Image (cartoon, rainbow, N blue to C red; front, side):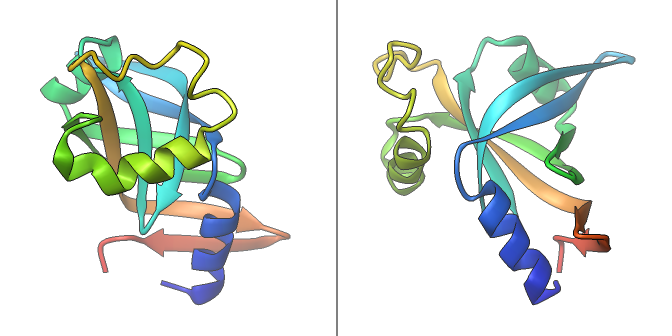
Length: 139
């Protein structure tokens, strides 16, 4: 992938970022705003395992995201309880990225249904100062 595009993705999304996340609810699309953090071709969000979006992703993991002159498609994956040992490194980064609101009572770390959603991007389009970057995250 173009090194300039990687730099732009990291600069724009390597922090707390609001993104529109689209899933499929049966035959109907569903979209909502999530707080996400970007790293190495993936977005990460903290959510609840029993939420509508996670039920939809369990049925059909194909998702789309949109925000700040970027649109992308990918695959949603439930990484499990955010305090699981395997999530330690990414949780540390999420706590830093989401520091402005993480401790305000919205996140219940003791609840095993509080999970990390990973969105592994497959492709996307990034716009920056009149330049279009067609991105293939599978390479």
